[in-house]
Length: 126
Image 1 (cartoon, rainbow, N blue to C red):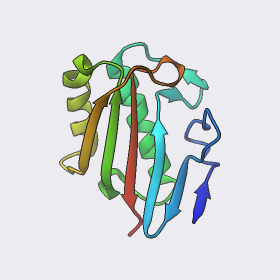
Image 2 (image 1 turned 90 degrees about the vertical axis):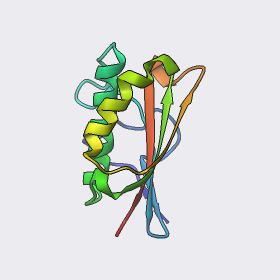
Image 3 (image 1 turned 60 degrees about the horizontal axis):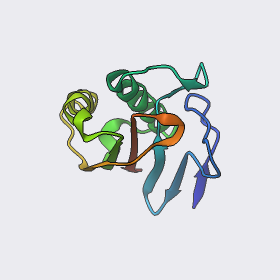
Image 4 (image 1 turned 30 degrees about the horizontal axis):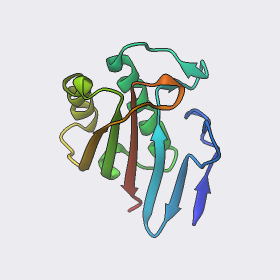
């Protein structure tokens, strides 16, 4: 098992966990919230802007491991409000460009730093 903790293009973890963990041919990526890595904080205030930032963070985390979004086999989307589903879904679909990993979407009572969306993914390493 290899812990990934120092991908500079991705925001640092906001708690005691790794950005990702490699194990058994898979990369388990911790949930990404819409922190802009350059600013070090959430900049976007709407769910569309936050989703775009989350997907950029995921893309950067995967690229640092030599992977792309097409390597993702499972995604979990956490929304502060399920009313945002129709706003998030087209952005997610466009980012994955026809690739359709297994996915769950759940509404939650709250997310770190007041984020409106968080996405975690599992990717195949080969």
